[in-house]
Amino acid sequence: MPAKSSTKARTRNSEETRQRILRAAIAVFAEKGFDGARVDSIAARARINKQLLYHHFGNKDDLFTAALESEYLDFRAAEAALELDDLRADRAILTLVEFTWRYYLAHPEFIRMLNSENQLEARHLKASPHTRAINAAHITRMKKLLARGHREGSVRTGLDPMQIHVSIAALGFFYLINRHTLSTIFESDLGSKRMLDARLKVMQEIIGCWIRP
Image (cartoon, rainbow, N blue to C red; front, side, top):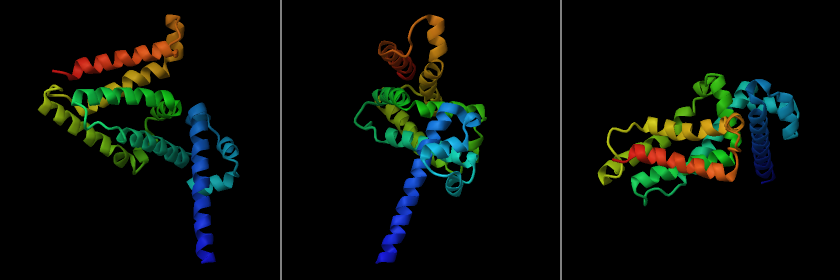
């Protein structure tokens, strides 16, 4: 029994260390980008030595991949928890618009890491064996939602689920990634609550007008 307890404790401590490294990595990568992030800084933030970081994740690229996968998993898990089945399909899609927007606002590290990965031409997502599995349920859910919308008559035919996903993401992503330059150009604080609420309304109007018959 003591041996089993000791093994469980080591496993638990190892997983806690791994999660602490991931949290530190996400924070540093989001702040500095992939190229600007230093493994020394991540190890210091996680309060571990660099050798232990390498033991868990191998190298900086592997750590970035794991951090990005973790961010995607959290996003998809939160999305999957939405109760959309009782909503008319067009309303369900607009609920996804609001969810995506509010998730971006609550998790700026996610869009910053995505921005960094795009600058790297998605090399980590391409190399990851988990990318398809992480996103498969979302794609299936969107296809079913569109099919239900066709049957209800609340969503027009001929819509591509990929284009809907891209449009929802782009309407929020572009605004938030560029809000500092846009705030300067338009001499208005695009990060204020009033402007953020107005942006959500615009996004829902755009998607709503597009998807409905």
